[in-house]
Image (tube, rainbow, N blue to C red; front, side, top):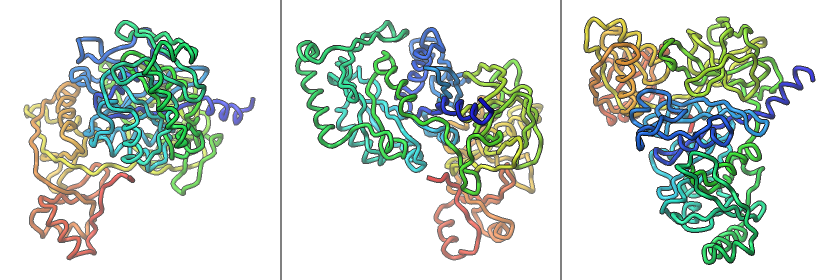
Length: 527
């Protein structure tokens, strides 16, 4: 086949998706089980913080292993059923929601993991709403059904009311939470019984049980499950691919990632239901055909993933065309030509030099200095994709090196972590680097910054919280007026934009009313 046909064929084989959830819903465990069922690992891992097991494949950062939480998004590429999966594992904690948001800009579908006992928690509701606002197709997994929890019908109502997605269960549980017998596949009417495996370290045997036998062996649990299915049939809550792809409905699967109940069925659904690589809109709002020349956009920058090399990796989502190792690509923002001799695919912190990549794939560009999050790359015809919006900071702090002899390392570390989006570093144009202010979505970002400054840049730092209440983007003309007002500080962001920090939110509100000509723009993601 010719190059264009090959690109379209390969794009159709790609499934690029993210897993999102609130902390402890089982997102990282589900990621590990996907790798197990796909044959990418031989034994499912467990987060180190629990029972001293080995750290998960997707949690590569030292602090993640210590805390037992995901802090940074991770790219995992692996084959399954003659398809290529690009799975982006994401942080669950709300303090790292901006990193998750950037990942959502690079995927074609999402798996939303909900703890059957907790349902949708407020701290990650924003991320679910992002999926809804972007019309991203969402598969939902009711996890931990082997433990006591809530009625699944109640959880269906919660999904519809809080997120606005109409749930359409693809599988329905037999047994109550904590007494899980298996599931009825509502698409085939088959009853699949699951068997536990030792610590969930291997695939769970699945037995398709005839319905007449299931009625005898499962008794009242079977009858209750049939009543639930009848209710769902009556209200028309059936899987509909068209409305799912339109971001209107969400197919629901029930299981337990820890014990492998329902994992294979969810993994199969990624191929059977989730979309392949889809055409992306450029800055002018026009969809770029998949078979045009190579283009991609950078959605993540990460330093020091491999401590032995201390290098910089820029992750880019391929949008169009075929990427070939060694090809020259241009950054649309700077017009700088970049070499791709050492382009890689990623599997957690492990890397493999790649020869080619296609729409939907995630490529890693090593030591691609000068790239920023949101940059567009192209090989021939110039194209530019929309920038990745940022979340408004909610917490602020000052930082200074504890050891004066480590000032250079401290400044280099701050510059790198600002570039990665770990925090926003704000500087006073009149003072420079001597007294930077840090801005973040959540306080845990400061903990990550402190840990990485010490362990990756050899510069322990003292982080002191500040009490600023609001931030706005401004310009030089407005800045002159704002400097005359008490309780306002004018600083410059890493991208060169001027921002105004307000000690009092009420003062900002009065200014917006009294002096509407001042430029005071919100920093908000498009949700």
